[in-house]
Length: 309
Image 1 (spheres, rainbow, N blue to C red):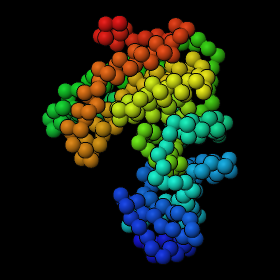
Image 2 (tube, one colour; image 1 turned 180 degrees about the vertical axis):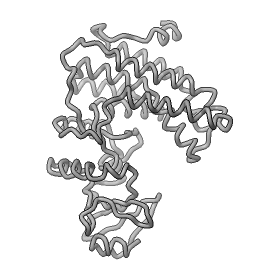
Image 3 (cartoon, one colour; image 1 turned 90 degrees about the vertical axis):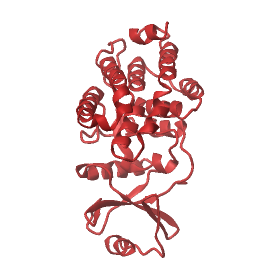
Image 4 (cartoon, rainbow, N blue to C red; image 1 turned 30 degrees about the horizontal axis):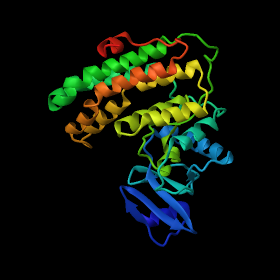
């Protein structure tokens, strides 16, 4: 791989290392990562433009390095790669404060239709339709998923309805979008957080919701996270409704489902999610009570009845 780096980037590292399918090296006392571009190719230039804008704003986001042809992507054996200069401690764990800082400091970011992921009902409905079709074709291979998928699809449909039916109870129907991440996990490092290949445009509550869900299913104290966040930040009704809808949508299950059908996880691994279903329902009820101080947010009747509330 060294000669490709030499040829395409005019960079000559003494040695190149590979770990967990990531290629990295030091050059002139700076860290570089040469990674597979795992996004749609048509997004590459827009991600680069976003990257440049964030760097101008003083962000520590990894800097995408163009190749000798002024291209974002370099093809090696027909596989697209991107070279990035890294400015952060790659092993340090990320936290909600740093995630929120990225969200809050980019609320005036220029909109981009190709990177925009804010139409949740459309995206979620498409995902549900795909899963329903897929499981109808391969269901016999995955009996555990078949048994529980309908429950999580039901949660997803509730989330879709919640977004569609949110009331015009405040004047914030038009919200600034910001820089967010395709997926945030409580186990992420700072390297993951500042990786430009994970960035999208969406509502700021996306990252908050995904972090809370990930923390919950990783056994962390989510209430300490939530109380600290709400102590520091005011959240309007519009964002609260979106946040609750996002917590309803079971990305935590669907992500594991996809890894299973792609043979990256064993089917039994989904049981750690399924076993906490009732506990998560209780959390959803408690969280709704926590944010619904003014009684302006609808609750899900089936959820309260099922849990005898």
